[in-house]
Image 1 (cartoon, rainbow, N blue to C red):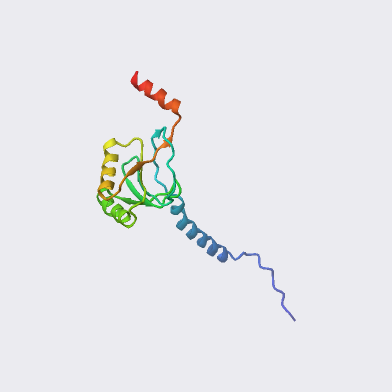
Image 2: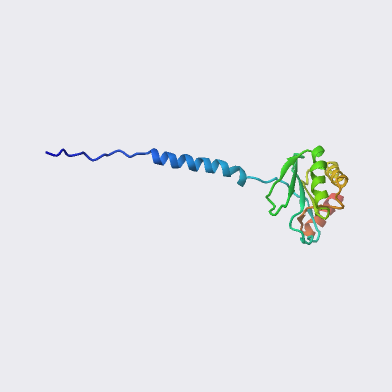
Length: 154
């Protein structure tokens, strides 16, 4: 006589836990990559956009805390580079400039930084061999800039 088996009413959750752990590892590995970017409050200026013949510039970003980031080939505004100090900037930028003497060099500095800090970075870049250093700004409404200047003068 054959014995009847009772239906099993339990769910085996081990495969689901394995999948969940794999997804967790993937999200933990990709989250820092997606959250990169240097928060910079760029000053506004009425200036013509520079022609972008070279799509691989050397960009030095300075955030509001004065931290310096070096980025070669910055294609998106949210890209960040390698954090450097003012002392190692000359060596690292110098290597890039010696390898590519015609590389455009730009500084993205937070509007709240002291003027001297930006000048220090520009001086280091020129000592490293940069022929010219450009400043990155946000486009400004000319009327707002003039109104702001008139308020400051008053």
